[in-house]
Length: 295
Length: 168
Ligand SMILES: C[S@@+](CC[C@H](N)C(=O)[O-])C[C@H]1O[C@@H](n2cnc3c(N)ncnc32)[C@H](O)[C@@H]1O
Image 1 (cartoon, protein in one colour):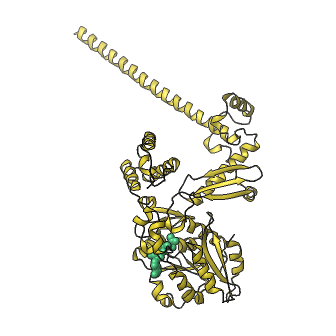
Image 2: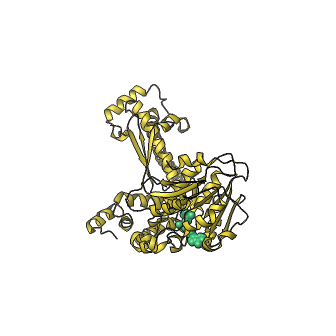
Image 3: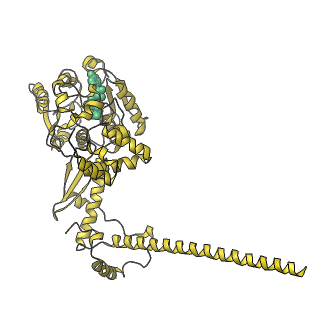
C-alpha cells in the first residue's frame, strides 16, 4: 500500500470527503481518484451506494465488481466475483484482430474457438462484430460459464451461433467439440507462474480475482502445441512474458507450414503469440490477416 | 495558444467577435437549429497519431487490473494534441477525443476564435437564462396580482356586509 501523507488525505477530503478512500487504489494520484469518483457517481447515483462503493475501493475491491460491468470494445459486459475482469491489453489485441478478420465469410464458414473464455469477452466481441461466424467457447469454471451465458443475453446474441461448454482443456482437449476443425483459436490462458504470483500481482488482484484464472506457466502453451495445432489453421494466445512466446515459437519451428509471430501491446510488452498456415485447406488468406496484426 | 477555450477569451475580444458575427447569427436561436458540430473527417483520421496511455511501467496483463484507458490524439500537420479519459470505455474515449479534435481544428482554422456553434451556444444559454428570468418575474407578478385581487374581493365583501348591517 503506498504511503499517503495525512496532509494530502486532508486536503483531498476538502474537495470531496469520499476522495481519500479512493486515493489508495489510485496510487495517490488525485486526478485519477477524481475521475473514479465521477464514474462511481454517474453509475450509482444513490448517496449510500456511492459511499459504500468508496469504502469497498478503500478495501481494494476492483471497481468493476462494484459497478458490475466492464466495457470491452463495443460491448458493455457483466462482471462479478469469481470470474476474471477483462483487461485493456486483451481488449486491445482482440479489437485489432477483429479489424483484420474477413468481413464477408459465408454463413458458418468461419469457425472460431475461444479457450479459457471467462466472462466471454473475446468470443462475444468476435460474435458481435462478425455475425456470420460460428463461435464456440470453453471454460473450466462453472461461475465463468454462468456469467458467459448471462453476457450472451446481455449483448443480444442468444439466437446466434454462440456456444459454450464447461470442460477442463488440460485433460479433455480431444473430447471438446471433437468433430470440429477451426479457422481460428483464441485463448487468454492463466499465465502467471506460481512463484511470481505473490511478488508481481497487485493486492487487489490477489485478494479478489480467482486464482484459477491467473496461475499457470507453460501448461496451456504445451496444450496448444499438442492438441490444438492439428485442429486449427491459425491461433492467437495472450502471454505474460517473452519466455512463453518463445516456447510456442520454438515448438513450431520444425514445422515449416506454420508461420509464427509476436504482437506487442501499447505499453511495449510482448502480449500475444500467434501462428497461421500459409497454405491452409480453406480459402482464408491468413497472411493478409496476420501481416498487419502485429504492427 | 491552441488551448484557448471560450472562458479564457478576454471579454473585449469576445464582444468584438460577437459584433462581427452578429450578422450571420439570427437574433434568437432555436436549439434544433444550432450550427452543426464540426465533423471529424476521413482526412483527419489519416493525419492523426493515436496513443493509448495506461500509465505505469509494470508487467501489465493479468497481474494488474486498471480501470482507466486514456486516448491521446496528435494531429500531425498542426501539432494539435487532445486527449480523453472521460469514460471507462476505450471505444467511447476514442470517439470523444475525435470530436474534441474536430472542434479544436475548427477553432484553429478560425484563427483561434470561437466558432459559430460555440457563439450560438453562448447566445442560446443567455437566451434561455433570460427567458427563465422572464418566466420567474412573470410568475412573481401573477402571484402579486392574485393577492391584490383577493384583497379587493375582501374589501368589497366587507363593504357589502357593512352596508347590509346598516340597512337593517
Ligand atoms: C486469464 S482468464 C481469461 C478470461 C477471459 N478470456 C479474458 O480474457 O478476460 C483464464 C480463464 O481460464 C479458465 N481456466 C483455467 N484453467 C482452465 C482449464 N484447465 N480448462 C479450461 N479453462 C480453464 C479460468 O476459469 C479463467 O476463466
